[in-house]
Length: 338
Ligand code: F1P
Image 1 (tube, rainbow, N blue to C red):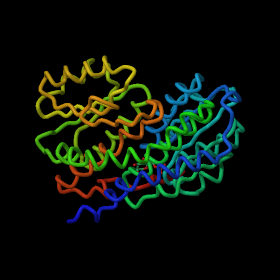
Image 2 (cartoon, rainbow, N blue to C red):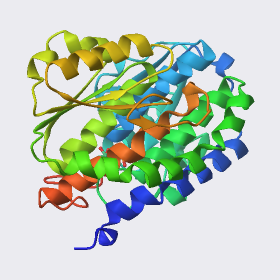
Image 3 (tube, rainbow, N blue to C red):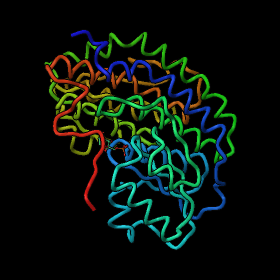
């Protein structure tokens, strides 16, 4: 079957148009002021919870104010472990805008008048209608179940939101180069993604990412699980030595999402894994298997880690005879009877 017939493939390859739209929408939005809130919470489910992990880290890194990420289900069922009596900003992220846990958690937050709500979504749905600030990126909409283009578009939006709330319009300006760099990366490294993804001699994948990259490591790990049914796990770089290292052998791929700031420590973990027989796939601005060469500041170029790793999962799925558009046991939206 021609790969172009898969929705997932078309969505991955066209994602940079949705990145550009995300930037336009956030630039035009009237955002809350960071100084008005004692607490900031990012929430979502599955992919969008993982996105929340990266977003909370980035918000804190850029604004200097603490932020936390929680799954929608936790905000709904265990809010006493999360909310305080401080004025709170809730940023809810959802591709569909209809996931029950996220919708119900936001509904309750609003009813209890805890603070303002920002919604980031690809569809103008029930969730968006509860928002004080409604960010919809229509070009991220998808036919396939696993999030690729949608996730990346919302991640660009949330990165831009953090930059703007931090008063860093300079970062927003440098983000306008992201679509161009993303296209170049897919052109240059698709063959690399295919080569590793199609190698069925590998039976385990580990995704290492620290700081704002940890949530992204969780997300690409989820792609590998959903689309390819392969054993895979995400870790913070330095955590990997504390036990998970036991799983590394010649069948393991260790993906390293390198930072500039901590590169020395992170690269050391990767070279140790290579010594143990693992295959390392490193991603970073320079001197890596996949080099971004973007000149975009580290804090706002996180989306660049995604397309090649999404393609890696896509090619592996096909090679295993699976349908990447329809992962086993999974629906595009989880709707519960509450
Ligand atoms: C969240 C989500 C997806 C997952 C699956 C089920 O959806 O958990 O992350 O891949 O498709 O739904 P949403 O709230 O972002 O629409």
